[in-house]
Image 1 (cartoon, rainbow, N blue to C red):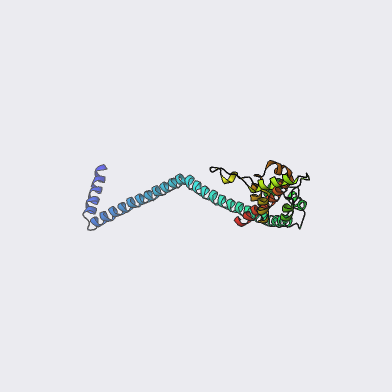
Image 2 (tube, rainbow, N blue to C red):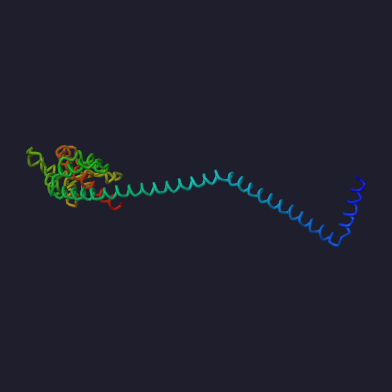
Length: 249
């Protein structure tokens, strides 16, 4: 039985290999096998690349999220800063009208148009720092005295009568002053008429400097004048400071 199978198989394989289409069939089979192998390799390669891209995207995702979060934070910070600058500018703009009003009130006080208490009442109702600072500065000023009044107050206040000889000596003494060669001119005693001259020039600061050089007796007699002159100087300086603040803004 087995011998018969071998005999049957032998001639079939021999006949198939010797057939005219054997080489063509082998070539077709080899090509199909090669195509299958290449297809399987291509599929595996694509799958491997997709897995690598997925792993890379998962690896890069935290850093991308971090960069995005940083950009959003920067954008939010810039927006908040812009809003803050706008609010500060609006607050500053709201202060300007109040300063203008204060300047006009100061000018009204200096020109004897309104009482000093009106200005102080306005400053008391204004909670802004500059207003409270100005109110503190003017706290020692009790009243405003114009230049004509300051000059009139420089008249001698003494009522003590002197003899003709004493008045003559006082006049001679006021005209003659012996100065040493190395003596600085700034140490020269002041005179009331020099104070009046500064007042006529509307220079309160200079008038006070000259006043400090007066003899002690005259300074004692004119102590009330000094306080009034200092008050006038504070009012003028405060007006000048507000005007400079407005010019700078």
